[in-house]
Image (cartoon, rainbow, N blue to C red):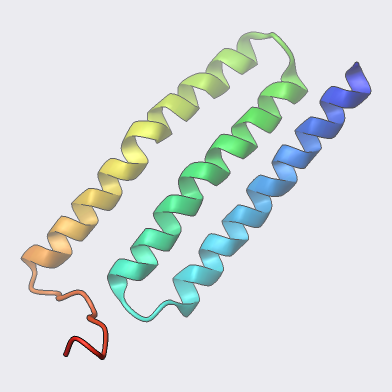
Length: 104
């Protein structure tokens, strides 16, 4: 059973790492602020979930698992809120989302 938990934990940690790298690539490759913001916010939320769950499986049922759950809960609320605040500030500052070339 311990080998299965270790394997699942490492799979989740690896998936979280891959998702983080994917978000970083999206940040570098996408053309405008809003698409970059979307790429980072979506991958950050899922990568955080995968990494913290993988760490919780490694720590077992201890106080550390409770702390990891509280970290996840805080990030669950602050990540999308920060993303929304950044997008709203960009729109308020006059930054216009990039439109399709066919619509222009």
